[in-house]
Amino acid sequence: MRNSLIIKSLSVVSAGLSIVFLINGCSTSVSGNRKVNAEAVVEGYATLVYAAYTDALTSAVSMQQAISVFLHNPNDSTQLVAQHAWREARKWYAQTETFRFYDGPIDNGVTGVEGLLNAWPLDEAYVDYVAGASSVGIIQNVATYPEITRNLLVDLNEKGGEENISCGFHAIEFMLWGQDLDSVDAGKRPSTDFIAGNPINDRRRKFLELSTSLLVEHLELVKKAWSPDVHDNYRHSFIAAPADESLQKILTGLGVMAKVELAGERMYTAYDNADQEDEQSCFSDNTSDDLIYNLMGIANVYRGSMHRLAGDTLRVVSLSQLLELQHGPVAETMQQQLQKTYQSFVTMPQPFDRAIIRPDARQSVMESILAVQELGEQFATIATTLGLTINVSPTQ
Image (cartoon, rainbow, N blue to C red):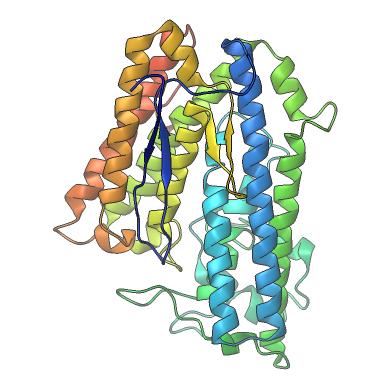
């Protein structure tokens, strides 16, 4: 639908969360009288990226505060509040993940911090006790790691293997929920694991405190890299570069996030193996929401519109506008594919770790995989239409 804002409320019940999507038509209203061209799209994207990281950081600080309250007085109630704060922070971070895959601040090969924010899957035994092994992990190994420090957690993250995770969302998740041994529900780590005074509990408390502060620290770094108030940061060079070069990066992030990351790494691998250990947020059973908010992040960039943490809506010059003005049929096809993909995601049975093993649910999961895979291919088509080239094929 053109020249209008379509608002669809798609309720997704996962861990008590209700998700509302704002799905724009190909034409988006923009404040001011900005000309719709590649340069304006690039500048609008940079504005949206900064807003998204701002909200991700703000929600992470709120999580940090809830975890501090929990550690001050560990009980079932304060643990539940901390878990809810983790879920809230997770949904804002998940919307930023389409800003990856083009060697930007988040995943630059030298300075990028993505692995310290969102590495997964996590080998539980690398961190703390698991069923059948009560004295394993960094926390239990006092002889090798006599003190839990910030630098230790950074140094040990992905050391010796990609599943050796000691930092980021999933390390915090494991601390808050513990190993998920429940066939229906999430992990059941007791709050008593964090009562002060016991030497191992004190190490566990320090691990949770430091991993949370590190997550905030690293989000501050990527936010600063996109800040309009910092001269000569990544945002500055991104906007100053030839518009087609930056537009190609935007489309790479969108296409790879959809086809390779979402359809492949985050959905098909778990589907193919039918194993909850391959889902992203396996301790909290939050994966269904992760996927939906990842998809929302893709849509935010394409439509140039983002619902903010404070409740307002940011609107910038968008790819959808550029396409509608220059290549209407391509824009219409993309809008239809976005709608189809949203619908497949919100009707997919939950939780994800049950859906990938239930015979009556696996077909729905596959339909979602195919839909988001096609979405990624559509971004490659858009790139070609605009005279650009992106690679959305998985690397071997």
